[in-house]
Image (cartoon, rainbow over all chains, first blue to last red):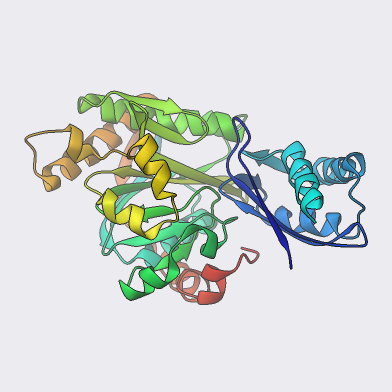
Length: 94
Length: 250
């Protein structure tokens, strides 16, 4: 059963994170909401990059930031810290 | 002074409206402003949204309200008695070095100018809204592909906001506490019929773009190639349940 977390941080849009954990690692994640991300298809790459990672905020942040830098991804209304926060909140509920 | 193409479409089918915007984005080499209306009420959801989280699907099906996934991000929109604009522009000139956030504010300027010319005290609210007081009258969404930007957005004219709130999953308690989050032109501009408001708004928007971006307009329709492309995009994306219900690569 996946866990669902909704975040609305100041200056950002609504972000939904649906996530599953297996032995303290991310086994499935789906990020949705009314944010903007360019190019749009990069959202799938971000989700893919998180699979198998342990819930280590620094490691998660580092992985997303590397992907953003290497692929010229631009986020508007969503941030790396919001994604990390959502994963941590979901893990706390698991 | 550069020349932009101006396309004015009367009410078109919802999936066709989205397909035409996408076809123009793919094919045009000249900046194009398209103004259009909707032949029936419809909902569009942002590219990153989950349909079941945003829309009361069963009610939409019962009332024959199509729900279409946009190519652009942003939120769910109930389209009904509104003027929609879409701008496709190469990432050059005013948009060449402009960040995405900045380009929202740039494109908002002629829309605000148009609304103010009709006596509406409109203001830009970052990231992508235009408000009157604290109520939204216009929202926009942008994507960038193949060296071009597509920004489309609404200007609410006489949208049935009660109906809108029925179909979208907005918490009714929030509406009760904070009031109606949107406002329409017909609530503000008094003494004009709905059709006269549409007519004035189209004139105001085109002349505001002309003035603020220093452009000439050449009125035209979509090209044959754009028409063929739109037919294909409508079939494979915007009237296709797979695209509308699940986020797929555009």
